[in-house]
Amino acid sequence: MNRLRRISSVTTTARILRPQCRRHIYIAPSRLIYAVCQSLAVPLVPRRAIMNEAPTSEDGHDLIFVRSLNLKATTGVDSWRRPEPQPIHLSLWLRTSIALADFIEDPPCSIKIDYGTVCSAVTKLVEGSNTTFKSFEHLAEDVAALALGSEIHGEWVKVAIEQPQALLRADSAGISIVRKRGPRGEVLGEGEDSVFINDLRLVTIIGVDGWEREKQNVVVSITMHKPWRAGELDRQCDFRAIAGTVAKHVERSKFHTMEEFVTALARKACVTYGVSKVTVQAEKPSALTFAKSAGFKITRERSFFALELPKEPERGGKHKVFIGLGSNLGDRYKNISDAVVEMERRGIRVKRTSSLYQSAPMYVIDQPTFLNGVCQVFLFLLSALRSSMLIMSNRLRPHSPPKTFSRSSNPPRIIWAV
Image (cartoon, rainbow, N blue to C red; front, side, top):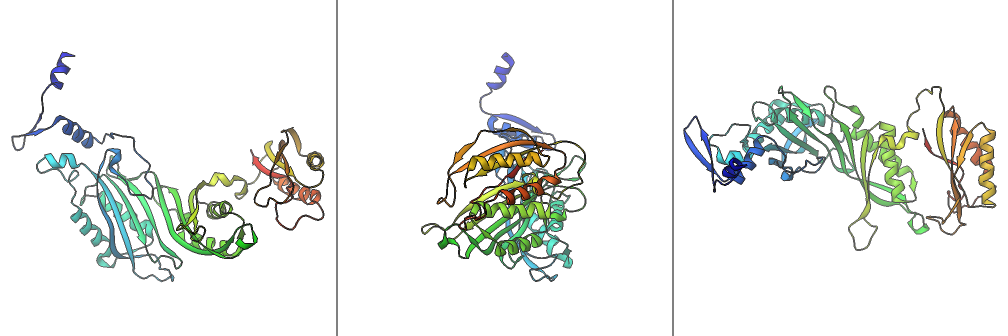
């Protein structure tokens, strides 16, 4: 304890002896501790997840960056499906230690990185010798390998590539990846890669009231997240195919709410294209008079749409399923009771039922109050459940349903299956 007190009482300086030049460098103790933490890669605050946003130095790592370097590159095909060179904006961030580089004479290359060298090396890689890249992924991987290689000596790098004219109806598309140097010098991934589409402009119908049921402009941004995989690149995040499918689906459909709209786009990416996780942002520029836009932003994983995924061959075993029941027409209690009896008649064993609750209608409020509940059932074949629900809903539906809204009658619906 006394020794610790004596060490901590050294007034203002600490001394570092550099054997090669026999010089003494004096550094304030607090700055020395910070520099040592930097050199040992010890984070002073917890690290944050890094996705599309630019990384910050708040996690204890200094950064050197080149933002929006304008280059010309061939990355697959252009918006007209031609293999022609296109303008791209390339940004990259590298971790370094400015604290050590500031106080050590002739610091090693891994500590002192010159952004001029980075810019020249990246420009030579992208534009030199008429290089052609198969996709954004290949270009980003090559730039990351260059940053972590012997020319730049980086240990961690984030690369973001954006192509302004990648799609005819979107402002831009691109990719963002994070890579680091492994213990054997190999390139390793960190976190998730992101393939993004910015400001895809679409026209569709969103609204419940009559005056809303007109075509209006919607601006959509989609970010597809995928885990890093060594070797072959994941083809499930084909931004051109996804953008085309989303545009066709949106402009051929009608939606009642923005919540329904953004969920439908997430469903298309996860179910149709197998994307593991997707972020969808949709905004209506004309929604509010005194605001630029209003909208929603959601992130959904593929498991969120588990009941809608392509079915695998069923195996033996009992499944536990929860089914939502509801009615707001006629004798509501009798309708729900008949639905439970009908399930039993079709071999769906009802284990237990919840209490019944009254709930006010949503969206179209000029209709009777709902009576809702849930039941838990067991069955052996999930494939028979959907067909049974369809038959029962048609059988129990009133003969003359209201024409104002498709949800006015509320047949049994599957809400969870295990």
